[in-house]
Amino acid sequence: KVNHLGENLKLNIAFKINTFNTIINSYYIIRVYPVREITLTANPMEGCAPLATQLTTETGAKEYLWDFGDGINESGSYQTTHIFENNSNDTLSYTVKVTAISSFGCLEEASTQLMVHPTPQPEFSVAPETQQMPGRTVTLENQTDGNWQFEWDFGDGNASSLRQPGSYQYNFSGNYTITLRAFDDFCEASLSKEIVITPMLPAIDYGPNAEGCPPLTVNFYNNTLDATSFLWDFGDGTFSDELSPTHTYRIAGTYTVTLKAIGPGGENSAQEVTIRVFPKPTALFEPIPKVIYIPDDQVTFINKSEGAVSYFWDLGDGNTSDTFSPTHIYSETGTYDVTLEAFNEFNCSDKLVLPEAVKALQGGEISFPNAFTPQENGPTDGKYQYGDRQNLVFYPFIQKGIVEYHLQIYTRWGELIFESHDINQGWDGYYNNRLCPQGVYIWRVIVAFSDGRRMEKTGDVTLLR
Image 1 (cartoon, rainbow, N blue to C red):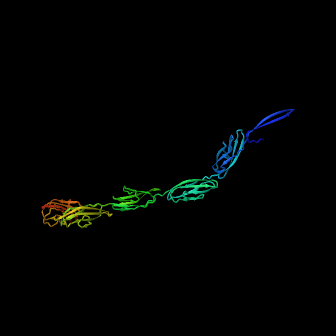
Image 2: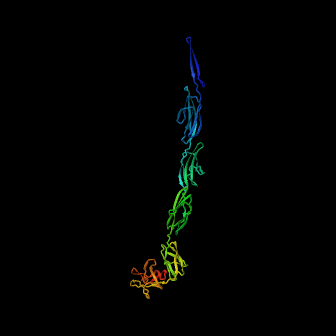
Image 3: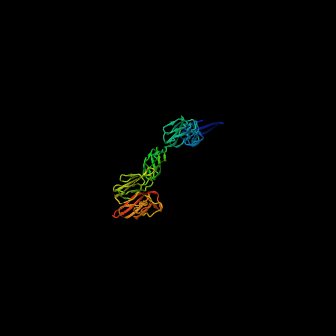
């Protein structure tokens, strides 16, 4: 036996044999190749799976055979890296062996042992992953296998070491990262999941409901929460992006006001406000006649208003009236502006000022009776006989000569029912061959006197039956 670790050793062996007094000499050469002892180092020798370990032995061999102890073998260099797995819940030991083969075919082995600890595989569920305030609670379920210690990081500065924390409530909206850390004395691993809690939708609060006469100006208030911008639809084709706008409605109708609010939590809208604009009456009238002669002439204001139920007249001389179509006698000469204000059932009003509505001139020489009683047995030609005291025909009292004469009779509603240009003809109380109802009628006369003056007068006459 030759133990030799150096260079190749050459041994010369000689044999001397005496046979029958004959000496036989024989020589043999034996070469002994060196076999070097090897070691095996692992870095690291202990750790958590998957454990990447660098394995190193001595150089100089022609070939290296590696047995990693996990069922995997390979042929390679004097140094290699191998990943050791551990899918169990217990620590595993691996025996790694390397065989070095020299160029002479000599073998040398070395081995070492590695410790691979299990690494946790954290898993958990979180629900819901997305929600909107006021919802802000999540339910957590730890689904990790194995007897590990745990640490929860809820992403808002709070943590828990419970295996099953159950539910967790956040204080504010936002994006949060929930992390579960599983660990023991050797190994650890973490898993993170994202959740989103969006801000609340804007909580709309606005007003007021309003009603009134046009033009109706409404000052809107806006107490909406969690909004950054607004869009008002006033219901009449106009819009505003102000916080609390003021808007004027000029046309009668019912309007629904919509407020759209936009905030971090999204967009919300409401149709909760109704604006009612009442109709407005129309004031309109006509004075008959426009020119009168004092002290006897009177003027009647024919009311042509629409949509009104009550009236107030300012007749321009300090006198007022609340009748439908007032009749008035002016006591002084002059030009008078007349104002009519008409009101409807909603107390909405319209005002008409008629400048120079009436012109009062001094004196005239024609007058009319204020009542007459027509005959009931049929119409006449209306011819008036001077000195006739039966009062069957409505006819003026003329003091001076008249060269032109135009008489008109109207109902109180302004309908013309009689007219004549014959100075000797009055009204017999008939219209379309039928006796008119008892009541008050408006007369209008236009005359020209022989002295060149012209006059227009109006008044009323009562037909009695």
